[in-house]
Length: 428
Image 1 (cartoon, rainbow, N blue to C red):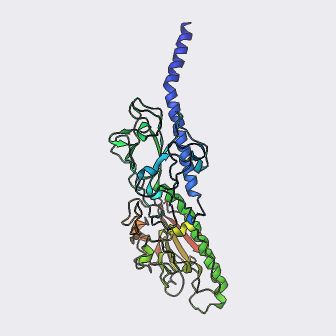
Image 2 (image 1 turned 90 degrees about the horizontal axis):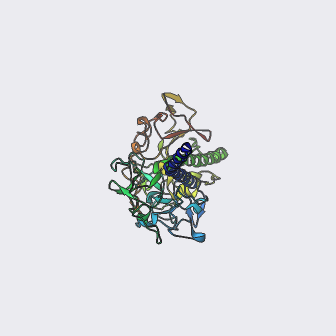
């Protein structure tokens, strides 16, 4: 009998001891599920809505606090502007196309999005979401001093599991952040705009937090970016092949020439200018960036039958062209072959280097607010990691390139006969 009592008591103690851990495990799972849903939603976006491009790397606005019925779990329409209150709320599970997620204590998940990565509200909005974007949310470790947001790892979004109400919290309508989220060590998850903290569980703090960094969003978008560019370069190359017999030229140029970011101010501009002349290809320029001008992408005025412009609206509206280094081997001025990793390779016709996300703020990172003066940097070293590849904007005739190092987040593509393929990193 005593043994049965001891076993029963042990079981009850175990239940008391492990149920909180199980609930926190369930909260961790809910946060991880929400994180993957946000990434999938962001990275699969395409097309337009009301003229506004649905762009990868953008994140949805939060859902309204206390909404019910058809509006529950639906993102608010606009979280732009200076009002940080519009960028914290509940996870927009319905907008994400997933079931409602609850933490281990049956509470809905909270969600914060950084302005630099929030969905744009119009096609003409000055703020862009592209490779120059830099997340600005601050997340601290339990000591309140160590930042989880240094070296390009700043969160573009945070997901909170509030857990059970603490002794000082009263969770009744209307919703109030400080009745769900807490602070510790001078940082406070209930403060608009943060700073935020991932602290240890205590009698006064029980939040759990997950994050999506801006760097992760941009690095995951670069593959789609490269596919978009490669497809358009192939269209141009094919239009050239059709046009060659009738072209009155002796110096073939089967690819558009690069644009000159250093010398052409329109290539650095963040203004919503999509004319056929803005940031155009510069004839006989061997290295620069992708052009922005529509005619440069189609051969309009050069080919009897111009190539179609299949570039996605998200690429055009968010000015992704300036994120890609671009060099060609064609014509008289750029006829010298490329030298890659010390080896001459005359078969390479064009090189693309898609840089990963910035690890430090660039001199002219796109501002986290609508700002027409936010331009790209003209320092290639702030985009590409490997020293040999960082000189070509200022010295476009230099044909020496190296494969990205193993620690780099750059991706190099080699184009031959209209087909561009990724080069393996150098991990010696």
